[in-house]
Image 1: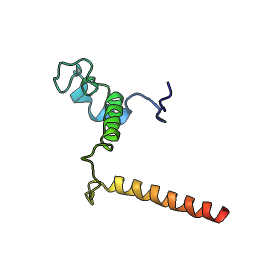
Image 2: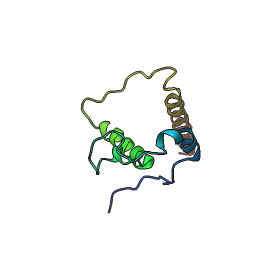
Image 3: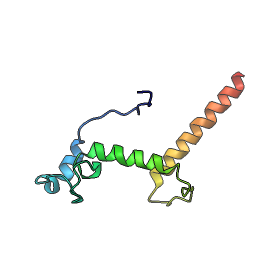
Image 4: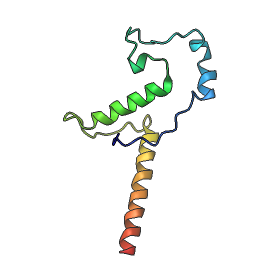
Length: 102
């Protein structure tokens, strides 16, 4: 297909997640939301499939006419803020480098 593939390396659950949630998931049988829908990615019990689905839904929501950019929570979204700053700095440096070479 012509659909671009995400640059994503699929792997199993990280071992640290396995250790932290062992007691909860040791008897887990899937469908944690009790939807009864076998095709629901959020009920699969597969963390990677859930994460991919949620990320794709988030990306689709950006196209919504109801989406707008707003303020972020200072402490709770610090990692998001830092990531955005890193991207901004990279793009600013790339634009400066491009203008010098032009």
